[in-house]
Length: 184
Image (cartoon, rainbow, N blue to C red; front, side, top):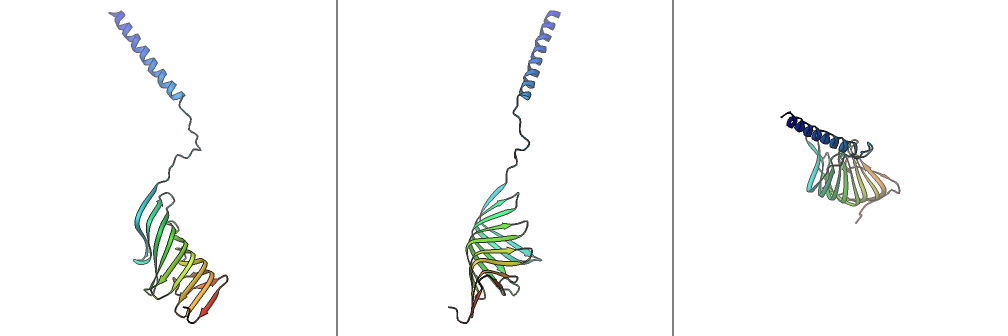
């Protein structure tokens, strides 16, 4: 009986040594992963027919609708297509801006609309430009490239225009021209 027990113990011992050897071989021959390899993947979400807005003390500052909106969760950058934005003025009037593309940096609260912008306000101001930027920290709306502003009794063109009151008043820069009177 001791021979059977010794034989059984020997078989168990051999099996244990084989398993331990197999585990050691698998561990020792595993592929090495370089520490410089980027294993983090960006989390991106896509929305359709979505609206963003910003309020300060319960007052709506702007809102932006996009047919397609892509959000990178890590960088908090929004990329939008077929955009309709509205900026609200202190006096209750507003400007509606249409643009093919836009980006929104949620960290800095900045919006950039590009690729040919057309806008009109509720008080008959209209403008066209290549690019509109909203600086959320400073509250400045800037138009850049082929700026063409029309309102009753005035037409203004420039390379760039800035406003702190959503184009109730504005500053023209670069090749600025103002024509007063009937601009139709």
